[in-house]
Image (cartoon, rainbow, N blue to C red; front, side, top):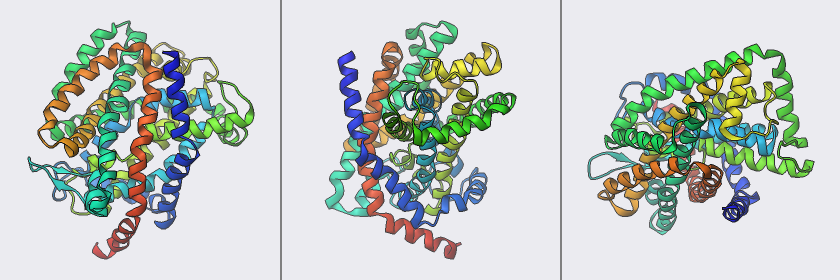
Length: 448
């Protein structure tokens, strides 16, 4: 297993190397500049659209609000709890700075993805609206680019079992074993049953589950985190200063000289940022394509809030709690580090229980949300009839992921590799179709 981990780590270092960082951050920065910082200028307007989007607005399958909750269900997961802690441990506090940078430019990326998803979506054999990178590549770029669409769908079909399934199930099993001493196979069996009950209900049941669980759990986690930060308010300035300084000077719990630490901070900050908010990955537009809307630009505004909520708010809370409680150099990493930080912050074992419950609910919603992404990718390749078989395989993989409790780091690194393979076709398409994004955006005020 050690040899496999070394091979995967080497591969991850290559795919998340300078070329990927430039492509990922460059695409987001390019769109941010061309849109004249629209995500930051229109942030309050986006929240007003989200509130209005609780009800149906046009053609589609689920309300715009439910589409965002579905995307957030898939986005808010182990990346917010275990991923942030791992980034801190390996890349140091500076990794959080680069997560922020990834999120700021990622909002423009997510905006563009959703605009294109609604613009080029189709209807499948059941009359459901389907879209995402494979469809805006095919319908927006033409037949000669269909190999790129196929590549995204192929990577998405496979990658979903890593980042969206086994990593999440594995994290739940570990949290339940640590907090409540529950056997991994029992956790896997129960989780498999619950996921199956939601999954076979289609996008409507997935959206309803996400709309119910995501806001409640996010607000609870946010509330506890803010309470800890409030009781450690005197430590906040130092924590924030440490994040900024470490981004350029280098300081990592895992050691290494300063230059190496800066590289690790950038690499793991960007990689974990994408793992957490999925901006540029191409998954969220699959959910937003199902929104009941006739306006791609409005849904783009709603979509970009996913990155803001996930990284700027939730991931930051996790990072600051770890830093103000001075637990980031404890030797722990992943979810155990976050649990230790919350327990220390509350001066009670209740903190660990809260983290375990939050991680379980977040991971469960991710399992449900990513199942939709994976089956849409599989449908693009193999047709509508493949959906039932894909769902069966998905449910079985949930149990396998929970049972493989000793292989979390291996699964996490594998997920990083697959993330990069998905992102490449999507980012190329975003750059090539950027004139469409800009044209629709410029026409939006006139249409309104």
